[in-house]
Amino acid sequence: MKNIFDLNETNAVIDRINNLETTTQPKWGKMSVDQMLAHCNVTYELAYENIHPKPSGFKKALLKLFVKSIVVNEKPYKKNGRTAPEFLITDSKNFEIEKKRLINYLNKTQNLGEAYFDNRESHSFGKLSKQEWNNMFYKHIDHHLNQFGV
Image (cartoon, rainbow, N blue to C red; front, side, top):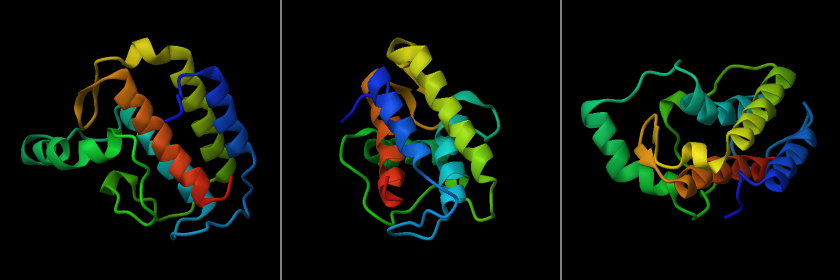
């Protein structure tokens, strides 16, 4: 798994994002490119913003037991996998705004560095190691950039 906390990897991901255009079509799936960018931003909203309700009780237990291992391991996501409701983007978004937001989140993550994330509480999965944070961040964005051929 590549390391999103490495400046070279962050820059490589940003270069891939900058290769997207408003007309870029997916190789699979239903999202448009603007929706995909907004979808990828949710990962960072969960890490940095207080705009999504935190799961509690039974839902939090289910997330930790069944979803966490899929999200933080190094195995790539399958095409057309299911996603959490927070990640469903069904309306059109502004491509340039979503692209800029995502690049800003990537730069923020890189600037904070892996030490900031080590043993830090996540929105849905409890405390994660820096490797688990990396896997979650990198795997998700890599999956969707591959989906759009960049």
